[in-house]
Length: 196
Image (cartoon, rainbow, N blue to C red):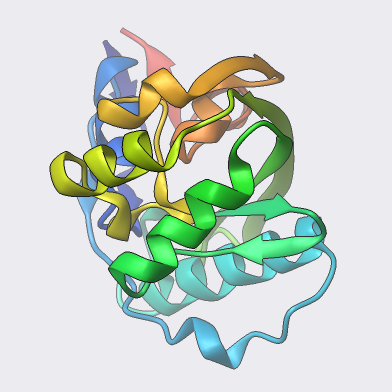
């Protein structure tokens, strides 16, 4: 477990991000930002994910100025196209089809800030993911039994879609939505959370 020197808030509803922080022993509150992501113009993946994370963190920070806010945003890039969260079954089908037999890249930008301390830290991690050839029958089975709609690219390394993934090159937790190693290094270095 870690002892918080300051209150930590995760500005996300992502169940996977919540689990990742819980598993490393961080005590935190969940406070989704509800920031409208459409307000951020699409740019290079690293800049785009950091800009989205910053906007989410700062939205929450206004109401919790004495807390440390952690925000993150994940996107999947396949064939130079951003794959967000599927909006329909057909959209999810098309995304998984695009990933089939190819290498795609997962970017997660993160932003950690405290309004009262006037400090901010940011970064972006990149992970290459290789998918197996996925048959249409397998995609349909996944759509019937999985939950593709809350995941960038329509899949996760956890659950039914895990069988699609042959290998990854880079951070595993990054693909789940939060590069834990990099985030924890900042929290420990800045004594936001210390080993207890």
